[in-house]
Image (cartoon, rainbow, N blue to C red; front, side, top):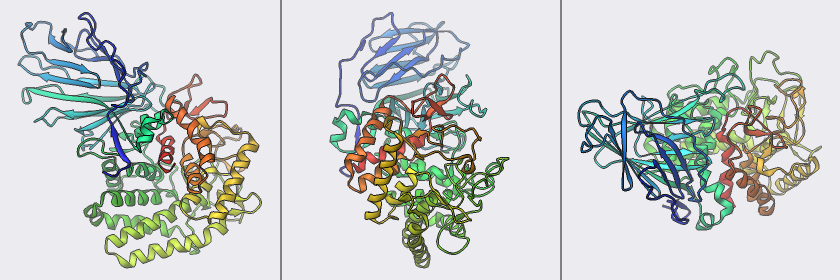
Length: 604
C-alpha cells in the first residue's frame, strides 16, 4: 500500500455514544456513527442513519417503511441484541433473526429451525431522499458478492461481510420511473438491498455491517475538518446499476460510455473497498460489458437520437482501460481484450475524416444547424450545446487516450500499433492549439465548425482539459487561466459552493439544442455544477496557482459536506445543476459526474 492511501475506520473521532445500552422498551440504537430503529412486528429496520465521520450527522433516514409480512413476530431486547421470534414460538426457541449493535457495527444473524422460514431483510431506500448504492463484484443475476460496500452519498458507508464459513450474496435492484424531467419523483423509485434469511439448505446465515470512511490522502486530510466533504463523499462517483451491471449516472439511471474515464480516474486512487474488492473491479466489469457489445448513451444505435458515436465515447473507454491496466498490472486482461481495445482505437482514429490530425463529428457545428426534431445529438457530454465538427474537448480526450493506448500496445508487444498511436497523438498535438485558440478572447474555443467559425463561450472545462492533458504550452496556459478568471469576475460568478458553470457567457439559441427561450444560468447554459470542475481545479494546481484553486475548492468541499448536489427542490428539479441563486435545475436526483472534482484535493 503506497504511503498516500489510507482507509479510516473513523477511529479519529469517537464521541460518546447515545443509548448504547437502550432500555428494554425501546427498539432504537444510536451512537455517533449510526442511528437505528427496528420494527416491532417483524425483523426489519424502520430507520437507518449513518455518519461515516462519527459526528452525529444522523438526521436523514432514507428507508421506506418495511413491507408487511404474513407471519407475526415478537421482539425481545437482550443486552445489546434484539431477537425476533415468530409470535407462536416458545421463548426458548432459537431466534429467526438477531440484530446486535455496537458503536460502528451491526451484526445480523438468521437461524432456520423448521416451520415457516424467516423473511429476508430488505433495505428499501427512497432514492428521492438518498441515492444509496451497492458496490462490489456483481453477478449475472444482479446479486452482489460479499464482501461489498453499501454507500449512502452525503451520509456514510457500510462495509458488509459474511460470517465465517458462509458465502451469501446480497440481492440488489433499483428503479427510476422516467417521465422527462419528472424522473425521480415517483413514489416507487427505489434502491433495494436484500439480505437472504436462513433456509433449510443454509440453516445459519450471518452478516456484519461496519461503518467505514474510504478515501485516499494524507493524515493532514484526515485531521482537517475542511476536508470532511472529501472524506465523506469520495465514493459518491461510484454508482453501480444492478439492471445493467455497470457504473452509471446513478444506480437506477443511464450508463454513459463517455463518462467511464471519470470513474476510472478516481478508481485508481481509491483504497481497497474490502478484502479482495476494489473500485477498479467495477471499472473492469463495466469495460467487459462494453467490450461484450453493450451499448450506452453516446454509442451509435443505443437510442433513437444516437445516430453517431459521440466523439468522447471511445476516448473515454480507452482512457478507462489504460487506467485499469496501469493501476492493476492485469496483463492477462490486456492480452485477452487488446483486440477489442484496438477496434475502439481504430474507430476513434477513423473520425479524423480529413486526415489533418483532429477527430471530427459528422454534424457541422455551424450556427443554426441543430436538427429541430432532435433526431441527432451534438458531439459530446454537453449534449444541448451545438458541439460539432472539430471539438476541442473531445480532441483533448482523444489525445490523452492515444498516449494511453500507445503504452497499452507496448505492453501487449504490439510495437507497430504503439508507434501508430504515438505518432497520431503527436500529429494531433501539433495542430491542436492553433486550431482552437481564439486570439479575440485569449482562450480556447469550444469547437470549430465546418465553415471555419470558432464557437467560444469561455468554456471552463475545455480550457482546463487542454491544459491538464498537456496540449497548451505553460506560458500560454497561465495567460488562458488569467483570461478565464478575469471573465468569471467580470460576469460576477462567485458561487463556488455550487460548482462552476461550463460556460461564462450565454450560448445563444443558434448554438444550442435547447428551447429558444432556454434561460441563462439553467442547466448547461451557464448553470453551476460540480461536473467537469475537476479540469479547472487541476489546471490551476498544475500551474502552481494554489490560491486561485483553493478559492474554488474549499467552498465546493463545503457544498459537498452540506449535501448540496443531491436531492430535489420545491420546483421538482434536482440540485445536480443550479442557477447562480442556488435554485435547482437538474433532473437526475444525483449525477455522479459532480464528484470527480474531489480528485483535485490529491493534487493540492
